Image (cartoon, rainbow, N blue to C red; front, side, top):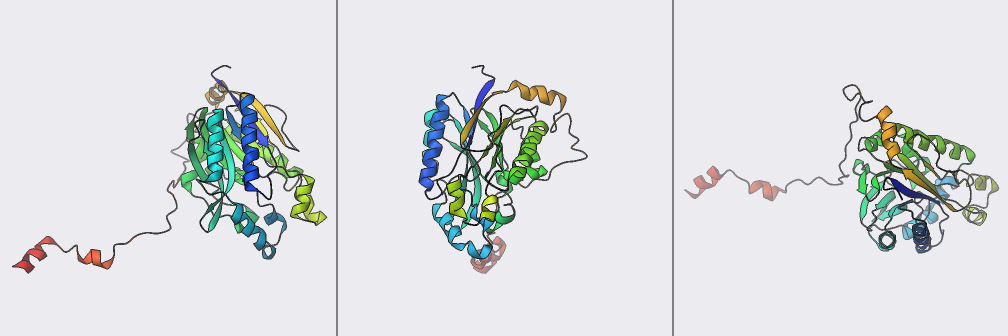
Length: 329
């Protein structure tokens, strides 16, 4: 394969709703299958391990407690057994892996995106900066420290989850770091066809504006899974459709027909020379930018939950030296 070409895969996959380890095993099998096809970067859906909290979209808050606690029990600790499994699979396949998980950090859950390099190194753990609507009952907020693009075996890779793509400043933070491959993740099986239509517009627009490739992956629920979440036909309707697993070029073109239902793997070859072809005409963080007129104020520090102040005993011990000399005299 041409050294300027990167074979990429976007995976539309169903989680194992009752077994986080089972979902992780499906992820690792998909990595192995993709490796056999020459794939060098693979993207999985939003919080696919253990699963997206679909219950939060169709249950009123007063009824969410039991399901929320189950999610706590099944959530991924980073680092931990799930990340060890995926890192090993990435290393064995020589593949960059982008995975969405619900992360547990002590008493809080987060919508977290993980980027593993082809040697299995975890390069980035970032958290969705603002959970969307119903998700705010489930996940905490991320911070600006996660708005990073990382150097990988296939180029500079960045990631955002779902409606973070409607936050233009979050997207611009990644664009200023010259991402070459953007990895988008959505839950899938949610809202209906309008969600899929909006998703396609969103990822194609980012590819054009950023001058990068976009690999987008969605989850998928089969009818049995939908019924296990809600027995109400009206609520079940809200858990169908909404899938557009796709790969987009820097010119905004779809590289293959998107996956709109069922499980599957979309594979495309990324001609990295198209990035320069696009940016020669329009580089929104270079020759087409006007930073003296419009610029981004970005706090890239990790959230600090405490600010330490010196105890009184330390403050008393810091008397001026001259006072100590007079006291001795």
